[in-house]
Length: 326
Length: 259
Image 1: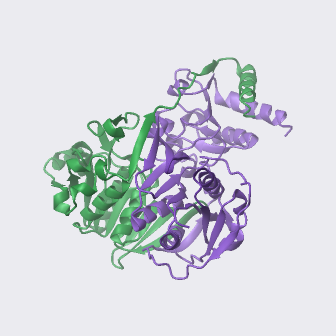
Image 2: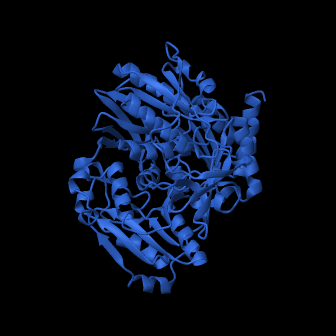
Image 3: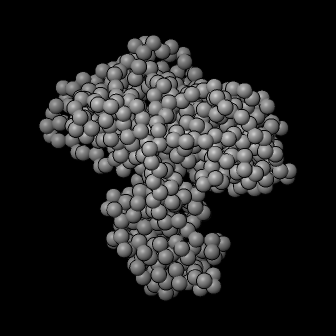
């Protein structure tokens, strides 16, 4: 399928990730707008079974069975995708901005010598290629970019689009890539360790409640966590409280942590320093609770609640629970 | 151990701007990328423990002397910078090729880089450079333990579920995170010593790279437009006592259909 648009999906626990569903939806939309074929590529152990969950978005799914054994997944995916790209000559690849996805994108960039646009917050078809919307400088500027050649890799952030079913479901095609034509150096996974605190997909969360220095200690995160539970939200944090050891790095939002764009961001006891702001200022609605009315966050919040978070948050949690009949 | 740190000089966070042709303005106020300082610190600790030296490698159209001098003051032995006017406006592909070519002229057991940069936020360059060099790529790293005798390195890589322990042969390229530990402040002695340390300047000609293959003329991506997002309306300020304040919050969230 020369000229095609491919979504490169990923699996976690035997299922396509949420971001993979979004990529398949994006590929379907670009296909409809351009008249070019689209497909979703799913590489991994149990890919054929997991692929069934992705066909609803419209594009056919190329399921490549691959047991990574002790190899890091990104190299396993990149080798097989590169091999398939050479055989079938698609034009554009949509790769997710997850940790593995970024690795896959960088590996494909150098393997295929393809142009790459990162940090994509939205894609439209414009004439003869994708027009990629990027949020740069921590959300201070929005840019539109395109590829000059007729091929490229787009690294897509979570929630650039909501996953939707297509008019016609696609089909699963099981593809054998027994000996990839491309072989990448990678290490050997000696051990995989699960940590309860790491299992927070804050980049995908539609609502985030985040705590800063104002929570005053690890116990203080209790009121933040309670409100997050009531709202069905993920818990975020500033660099300062992660450095203080009050909560894990997986929760950190900002310059050297994660960038997020939820519909609702509740900032509790967060002053809004630039290092935090660059990770969250493109959020839909920002509600700040802070004792200091002059904290920098007042400049970019939509609702600035001046008060003690230990007084406000428990009452807000109760009010939301009551409203939801919890 | 010989460790090369990929050090990117970036505009001070919050002060970034685009100049003609939608390029990032690198004419002033550059500092070392935040994540790069964590890997520099990790590299310095590794040579303190195992011997050897740390060399920084940077590239750009203009010298990034201040950011590099700081790295030298922290303890890097010397610096290499690829400086060439032709590099202005280089895309990701050109950046990967130039860094790989420069690394081809250096000797190393490890190359370390920040997991991403504050101006680009892409986090893909490390993987691309590793592929070009044909060495293992270990990303999102929280801890580095080399075994120089065995010629291997073990890292802790942050995963969606927790972390993976990955072992690779050296040389390898490692992209590291803040979890590697707080960077040190340069000592007064370090600052004095840095003044006499070497910053080697290499041009594209030194690397055997045709200037026509890099820079804005050869770029495979183009910015069409750049605009700040629509300004927020300004915060509604709530100063009532807690019970009344919470009522206001609930009304506000409900009015925006957020609860």
